[in-house]
Image (cartoon, rainbow, N blue to C red):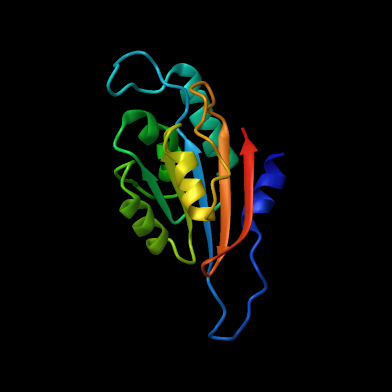
Length: 165
């Protein structure tokens, strides 16, 4: 499964020497991993969550990622920080309920691969905004293992995949 996932992410379109060829952008969205009960306002990841974050890093280790974004909460930062460090990147933070942040991340990610970590009530709405339709409801509180992979050629959505890990 790991190799199929990496192949899926690494697929790109045939290069066209035309200056009109649109850039291919990949946006990978994940909900944070399982949270602990150490702080009701800003919990860390639980042991199971740390294991899931390591699994995510292993799953995406061969995928070159250009930028990482997480909300300013420990659980989202911890979910993607191992992967970001492996890519020689720092995790940038964004405000989860500000659609202007999403637009800026997408603009900055044109022609690149970006990973965005969010929450059960923010990731599905971001995916819906990006694909232009209400396809995904809010996630159950105990659903931590979904990855959305959106591929755009220019501004056109050319592929969307949802995986469980």
